[in-house]
Image (cartoon, rainbow, N blue to C red; front, side, top):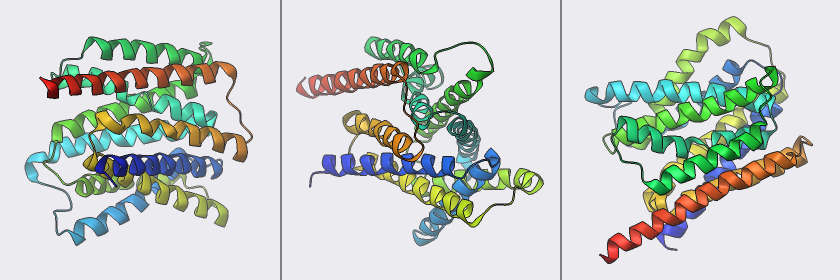
Length: 289
């Protein structure tokens, strides 16, 4: 199997993992968002801890990278909090699609903070994706818009976290970054969970532990995928997450996205496909030159 195909399979596995994580978070029912977030990250922290120890790396990375590692963790934590809130209050596939705006926002943030010049076709894709979100959100400017705003906020903070990861580059191992982020979030959530803890049934414990397991699968799947193939070549396959989430919404929760949401999905996916094709075309031209 070629490295590219390995990357595609790992990305599909990652997309499935994150879709299952979202489903189990939603299945866990009416629990505080901080409680769900703690479970999701505690499991990831344990797995990442084992990998860091196995590879004999520093648990918290190098001293000179602490500001970036801390910023990545803060942004990632806020992204998950808003994402889990949107999962609880929206159709699952709507919450997932809004979260998938992060690659487009990453282009904007990279241009602002990393001085990476955004290309005209990338700006076109961003505008198209934004129009797609309007179909998903169907803005009415009342309290019903709050979960949608949380979904967009989750993508903003996720894009911020990815921007910091780009700034970090290869200065830290991926399992060190995952452990730092997961451990930080777990410690930050712990005091809030202790004060607001809601007793859980055995079923809820199982759901949240499974959410953590599948989140870990998704996290490591996407990290390993991009080691086998560049994001430009395979990133489009991560949008299979929306297919998985839509099917889970329909068969587990009996939630079917409305026509406007489906149109929005298609517009956002088309923007991503357009950017994917243009990136690959430019890369081929550069190699030919």
